[in-house]
Amino acid sequence: MTRCGFSVFAVFCGVLALAAPASAECAWVLWSYTFDTRSGYEDYNIDSAHATRTECGGAVERAAAVLKGKGYNVAGAFPGSYEAIGEKGTTTRRYYCLPDTVDPRGPKGK
Image 1: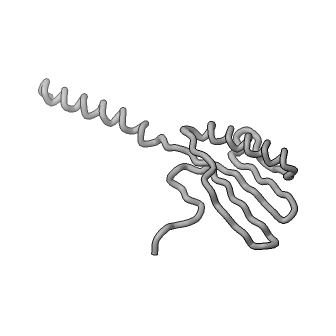
Image 2: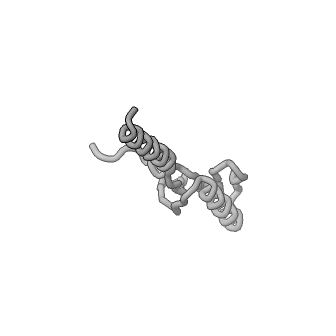
Image 3: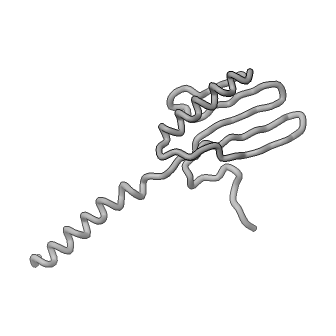
């Protein structure tokens, strides 16, 4: 291989090495879902966005603490669960982390 050909190959490998880890990263979104069995009310909302899944999991734990403070019976919200479900009367609140590429409301459009 010529010196120029080797240089081009080395640069190409370097670009690939840098691009691969960047494409694997994504933001994480904390979603909240509310459902009331009596009225049939259902609602999805984006609560917050986070750089890592771990940060999003911390937000789930904080949201669960707020639910507990409001009198909800809370399940989940332990480190590594990335989800908390609170129930109070006929209302269920769910907080959970998803990659920013996933929308739990389903596909948009026709």
